[in-house]
Length: 364
Image (tube, rainbow, N blue to C red; front, side, top):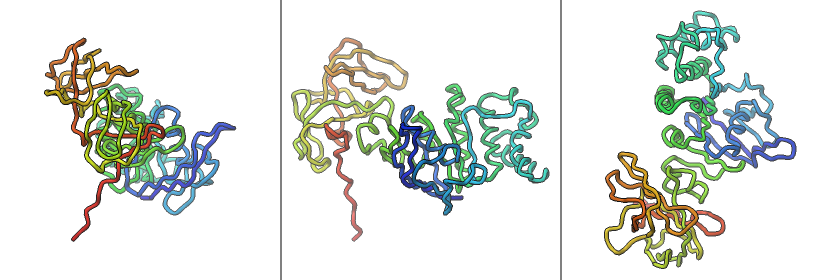
């Protein structure tokens, strides 16, 4: 398959800029997910790669070929849309093979490719059915199969699961993960606003915000070492808790009138900071030492876990993700603590992470 190289790509509609100089390298065989809030430019960037949107400045290359002026049909890409775009009067077999038919592929070769794709997507028993006889998840798999038979260099997915209910989303996400394993050399670029899809499917996640890339990295890297406040709040559910604090540049962090210690040498020096701690890293404090204290405003018992919303005197309550058996009730005072190594600090003005790079070990 092929690398996708994006260099200083810009897009605007009239006087309204949408993408501001995007630089991104996607290696052949990677599964890359674009995430971000509505209007951040992720679908626009995908459509620019596909050739469905004009690039106003910069370059997009697939393999060694700059494709700025190459038509969508000649770019070697296949796109899967959220609305399936199936022909209602055609069977699954004909829908999947239609593009090959238009390309003049002989019927025997066309039928072979359709059968192979159907087997891969567990659609063999549905080849002679019409789209109206299929579930939403099956229709989306047909749309994916139509892309597979073309043997594209790059697969592009534009929020393919957004029209499915919760159960079908999970089932179809599993199918896409299996497809990724069955086509290990294929480059896949996937757009979603659902971070669960991003975290479970991606080799690499690209977080976009207001037309700019905030961070690129593996799911675990973005979760463990967010580059800034935006990524910290966007990745993770419930979102990371953020509170005002101070930092002495060594190991002492002050908040809520007390001082706590963080591992020395973990963060670069700053004065006013934002302290971040994920809900799942909080636990009830058993002794006098604690990180934060407040009053429980709401409790959500979800079975395996309990979400406690704690009023600590800030504009938003603190969220603690506790064990399902945690003894917390609305209106009670609680103290919460966390492992100091799980605490994040961000610059109070710029929002940039203050975490220093992890030390590298040198071979003897």
